[in-house]
Image (cartoon, rainbow, N blue to C red):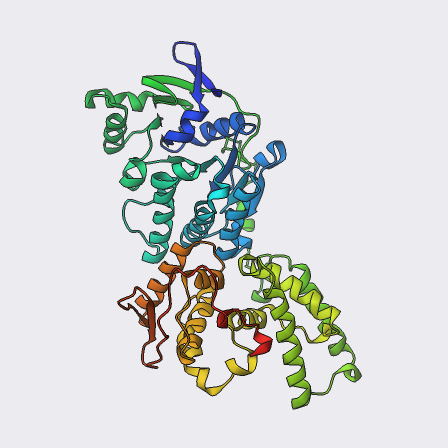
Amino acid sequence: MTVAIEMGNTTAGGAATLDLEELLATRLLVQGNSGSGKSHLLRRLLEQSAQWVQQTIVDPEGDFVTLAERFGHLVIDAEDHTERGLQVAGERSRIHRVSTVLNLEGLDAENQMRRAAAFLGGLFEVSRDYWYPVLVVVDEAQLFAPAVAGEVSDEARKLSLGAMTNLMCRGRKRGLAGVIATQRLAKLAKNVAAEASNFLMGRTFLDIDMARAADLLGMERRQAEAFRDLERGQFMALGPALSRRPLGLRIGPTETQPRNAPARLMPLPGTTLEDARAIILASPPPENVRPQRRAPAPDLLSQLMAAKSTPLEDDPEAIEQPLSAEELAERRERLDRILSAILAEPDAGFRAIGVLYQEFVVRCRIEGLGSDVPDLGDFRRMLTRARAGLATDIAEDEAWQDVSVRAAILPEDMQGVFMMIARAAKEGQPCPSDAAIARAYGTHSFRRARRLLSYIEEQGLIVCQLDGAGRRIVTLVELAWATAPGDPNAEELPAEGNRSISAL
C-alpha cells in the first residue's frame, strides 16, 4: 500500500505529494537559508506522517516540542539526562515504538553534539528484533555533521559525525529513515549529504550553496540563480519519493505552531529620554541581592535526602554517634548484599543509573538502612566496583589504589570495565569476552564493547593481543598484570565474572 503525504501544492496548482514508503528507503535532505521555511516544511511532514510511522526529532532549539500535545510525542529534555541515559532512552523508544522529540535547548554546542550522538547511537544499536521503521528528523544538521572542525573538541565532533554517518549511510537496513535539514550545504559534511536521494531546496543566496543545490537537482549552473527568487515556503523538489524531474512546490499549512514565534514589528513604548536614562543607567543592585539563575528543581530522592538530614541540624540530641568498626563492616556487607541482589536481575546491566539508584534506596529502606543510604555519588562508585566484581573491602585494599588512580582518567561509565579487566589480570583469569564487557558497560552491542577496549588502549592503560588461537590477552601497562587467554566471542559470561560481590 502506497502512503502519499500531502506536502502542499505545486507551482502549477496541483497537489504536491510525498511517497512515505519510498522516503523510508531513500532519505531526504532539506536546504534553505534562515527564514526560508525549513522548519515549517519539517513540521508539515511530521504532522502528515504521524499516524503512519514512528518519529524521532533531534531538535536543537526546542521548536518541535509542541507536537507532543497534538500528536503524543514524548519530549526528552536532554539537559536533564546523561549521555548514557539518552542512549538507553533511544533504545527503549525503538523497542516500545514511541515517537520522541529530543529537546537540546539550553545546552552548548559540544553537549548538544554529545547527547544527540548518544541518543542516535541508542536508535542505531538496538537489537535486530526491534528494527521497526522510524522517521529520524534532524534540524540544523550542520551542527551535528559539520564539514570542518569548529570550536568543539575533536572527540565530540567524531562522536556526532559518526552517529550522523551511521544514520544516513547504514540506517536504512535498520529501519532508520534520515531526514536532515541545513541552512548551508557547504557547512554540512559531504558524506552525510551524499546519502540522500530526495531533495527539497529552498531560498539561498550564497553562490557556493546555490551551485551545490543545482548539482544535486541536476540543474545547469546558470539555473542556480533561481534559488534566490524563491519565496518563504517555496522549494524545488527532486527524488524518487517526490518527483523524477525538478518540481516547484509551496508547503501547506500546519496544525501546530513552533514554541518560539517569529519576531514581528511592534511600536516602541512612549518613554521619554529622561525616563529611559533613569531606568537604563540606574545603579546596579548589590552583588548579594543580584537575581540568580533559577536552579533546577531537585528530584524526589534529593528532597528525601535533604529531609533526612534536617532533624540532625535542628536537634543536637538526634545526632548519632560514630559507628564502630564492627558496625561499619556489617553496614558495608548489607549494602553489598543489596547491590548484588539488584545486579543479579537479568536486565540490571542495561538500566539507567538513576533507575538502579531508586531501587537501591527502596531496598535499603526495607532493610532498615533508611538513615544510612549512600548518596548518588557514592552509589555510582559502588556500582562501578560491583560491575567489576569487586566487593567494597577489596576495592579499598592498597593493592587496588594504583588501579583506581588509572581508572580515574577514563569516563565514569568506562571505569567499571577497566577494573573488571584489572581484576581478571591480577587473579590470572581469562580475559573477559565481548559479551561480558558489553554487559559491564550497559550495552547489547559487542561492536561497542570492542570499540571501548580500543579506546582504553588508546589512553595508554592496556595493551591487547591475540594468541595463535585467536584468544585475547590484555596486559595492564606499568602494573605488568596480564589476563589469561580468553575467547572474545564466548557467548556466556565466565563463571568467575558471574560471582556476586557478596561472595568475594
